[in-house]
Image 1: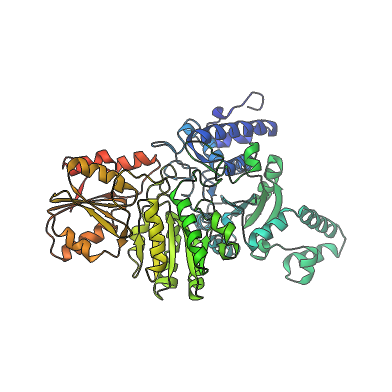
Image 2: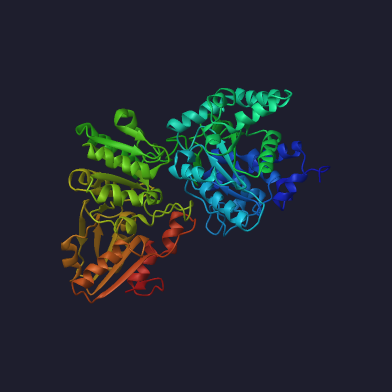
Length: 618
C-alpha cells in the first residue's frame, strides 16, 4: 500500500492508516482539510475546531485500534476527521442534513463513536468508566479521551480527573490545547495551560535530569527514584511536577499537534505505560485555512447558509439574541444593580454589547453552567440583579442549582434562555425542547416565551421588576417573523372569531397558528407568560368545546399538559388536543422539524380540520 497513491476514499477502515508512510499521511491530511472545508461551507457546521485536529486524529487512529480501543471525543465538534476515517466518507456530504450523519458523535451511527457527545466536559468521566469496565472484563485495550482546553473550564472535567488519576486503568487523556473554546478561554486554568504551552524547556529539562541521574554510577539511579516518588521541594525544583502529575497522571508534553511523528511517539509511549497518562498537545484552531487561523472564533460554527463576516459567533445581527443583549444594556443604564453572566457564549447570546459598555458588571465564567447559576444566586444575595444568558440545552446542566441554590430561598435572578425550541441541524443534543418541562417542575419559577422583539423587551423588563424568585425568558435562535396583527403583551391575548374551537400556542410558532386559524376561522390565544397559568386563561378556556394546543417543545410535562391538568381540575370535559414533540428530535432544517412534528402552518390546518393522523387527543 505504501507504493501507490492513496486517497481518502481508498480507506475503508481506520486500521489501514498504519500502513501509510508519514509523507502519505501528510498528504492525506491535506485532502481531509479540503473535504471538511468544502462540506462545512455548504452544509454548515464546526470548521475551526475540526481543522485543528486533523493530524491528531490520524495519529490516534494509527496508534490505537478502534473500536476495541475506545476513543471518546469531548463535545464531538472536533471529530469530523474521525468520521471521515471510520467509514463515513460516502455519507459526509450529508453532514447535519435530514436523514444524514450527525455533526456530533453518535454510537447509533457508528461503532467507532464510543460515546454520545454534544455537550462539553464529559469525555474524561465517560472514558474512565469504559476503562474501568474493560479492566473488570479482563480487556487490556485503552480508553482515550480527547478534550479541548475550552471544555476544561467545565467542572465535570475536574471531577473526572480527580477520580481517573487514582484509578490505575488504561486511560489516556489527550488535551487539545488551542487557547480557544468558542470565545477566548477565561480563568486561572486557561492561564495555567498557557504557561505550560510555552514552556518547551520543561520537557527538555526533565529528560536531561533523568538521563544524567540514570547514567551516574551508584548514586544517580537511587536519587532519581527518590525524586520521582517524593513530594518534596527537591522534586518541585528539579522535576517541576505539573498539576496533572500531582493528580496521579504521567504527564507527556507539550507535543506539536500538527507533527504526526511526534504525536505517534507520544501516544505509543502513553500506550505502553498501562496507567493514567495525560498527553498535552498544542494545536492551531483553523489550521490549514488562513481566514480561520486568523479569526478562529468567526469560523467556529458556520451556518448552513454559509459564512458571513458580521458577528463572529452569531451569524445575524437582527435576532432575538441581539435584541436581548441590547435590551439588557438599556435597562442596565438606568439600574446599576443589573449584571450579566455568560458561560463562554458572549457573542452567541448577544452580550458583547453589555460586556463592552459595563465590563465591571459582566462575567464570563467559562463552560460552567452549574457555577453560573450558583454564582448568580450569590450576586443576588448581595443585592444585585443577575441575568444569565444561556442556551436552552445547556441550562439542563443547572437543574440542581436552580432548585437548591436559587428557588428554595426565593433568590431573584433572570434566565435568558436562548435557542429555545428547534435549533435544526445541530440535532438531539442541542434542540431546546426540554427547558419548559424542566422549569415547570420547580416551585416559584415564572416563565415567559415571547414571539416578537417588542414582547422580548417587555418580558425581560417584567422578569426583572415584576416578579420574585427565578424568572426565565425563553426565545428562539432566529429572527423575528411578524405575520399577524395581534398587539404585543407580556401576558396573553385572545383573538375571537365567534368559534367554539380555541387554538393556543406561544413563542415562534404563534405566527403559523394565526395563519392556520384564519383559514379555519378558529379563535386564537397567544400565551407569552406561560407559567404560572393566569386564572383568567382557565376561565376563558372553559367556554370552548374544543381546544387545540400547539407547542414547540416536549409534550410530556410541557405547558399544554399543565393547562390540561388545570382545566380538568376545574371540571372541563371538552376535547383537548395536544400537538408537540415526543422523544428527541434529530438533525434537520427548522422548516423540516416544524413540519415533521405538525407545527407548520399546513399541518396545523390539517389538525384543525380534524383530518391529520399526527394529532394526540386527550
